[in-house]
Picture 1 (cartoon, rainbow, N blue to C red):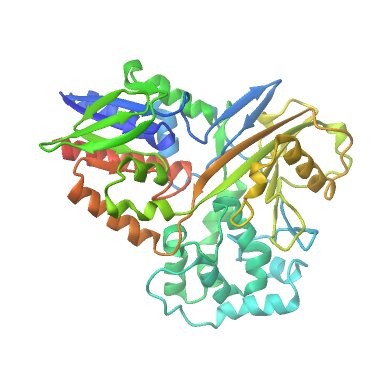
Picture 2 (cartoon, rainbow, N blue to C red):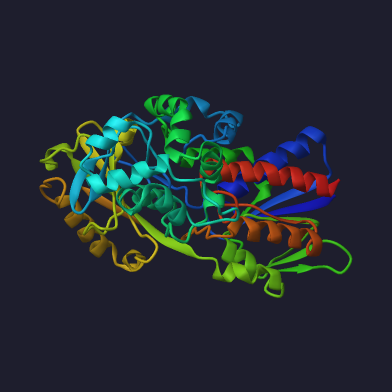
Length: 462
């Protein structure tokens, strides 16, 4: 009987274990599967808290179905009937301390409708004219990777980038766009520019379908929270498969074949194949003697925090006619974004109640995450007071911190990851990696990586 150990019980590890178990059963493979997780719960950053009629997400609150993997997995475990789409509502941008409606037709901050862009007060006339230069600028001559900041600033100018594109991307990656890799985050934009020359014209051609998706509710979650996806997969796995509270200290390659996995609690497991879905810094510490993994120690990851607050509706004296706002760096705010969760997801709060969810932490401004819960609550309330008139304290506040949790795909990430895969194949055959540190941060990308790595494992074992 061959043994496969999956290390890490986040959504990537869960998807890997689920689909590997499925392959084992369907093809009657002589493989024993184990999933080990360092903490005492599965799901990683996905964590839902249900209390007093509220559904509070402590990590991600939804996913964009860029691929079908989360929908397929939901159907597999029988929770597809609980899928819900976000309600359509306005989005705002805070720039220079003012609240502006996001220009209609913006896709990642790129205008696809001229009228809303011309009439918005978010940009000066000079800024609008500079963005219009996208129609006449030549294609980028850079054939290798480049930073998102360099790419967008060249096409759209600093003002549009700083007031709209950068805060939008900070909300996704919590990173510095002048360091982040274009080819590892939005390679399709590079292809659009190369094909159409103008980024605006190219995106506009592809925009009609995107607008239709957005109007139908672009984001998706489950009525019982994202945790139900985690719980559903956990219940679908054989009970003897899952081992919690098992933190890996070292992995040793045996001389003949296979691996010995040592845990901090003294346990030892033997494996013919190992799938590692933990963050990149953990991966390097498991194989400290392999120099090709050294760069993972230097690969940055940003710390972030989410702050959920519940209010009685009467406490909000000034309503914002929208679902969310993002904050540009040139504004005197500590929060990077805020979602009016009860509007975006009506199932998330009882009737007559308000659920707000604010985000803290970005590249270069991470120390705020280390403050106490009371200090963070006070900072968030002071920021919210600038936008809405609040009366009294929230009924509850839930602060959740994620230290070094947002891996940063800096320029050259794709090339480094490819070299890592090749080194693993040559020097550690049977060891496979997947997860948010490598090929996408979102839930769909992580599940898809799990599916891909299962095919590699089965091929290797055969």
